Amino acid sequence: GGEVELAVTAPVLAESEEFRAFADAFPAPARVSDSALPLVLAALHEARGDGGLLAVLPEDEHARDAAEALGWYLDPARVALLPSRCLA
Image 1 (cartoon, helix red, strand yellow):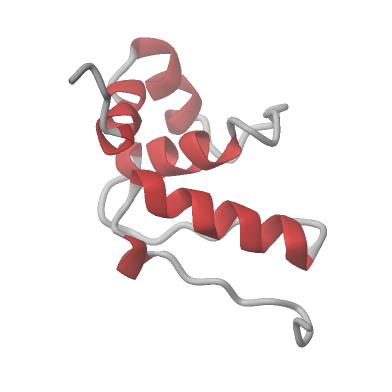
Image 2 (spheres, one colour):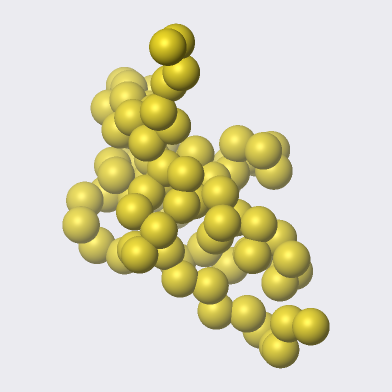
């Protein structure tokens, strides 16, 4: 008991007035910590509807970590990783 399912947090954030203003202004500059990035991307995906969302990250490792963490908030089958080069 007491555990919160992470999947419910993205829609809650997406429905907040402040986040809705950000999503409506998207693309807009934003500084997001590495640990919050998956939640922000999932909420942005929720706020913008059924369309896809592409995030370009500076390193394959960052992209892999973000894609894995996005699976905590979204259906993992809806998350794809397209690395820039072969991963070892």
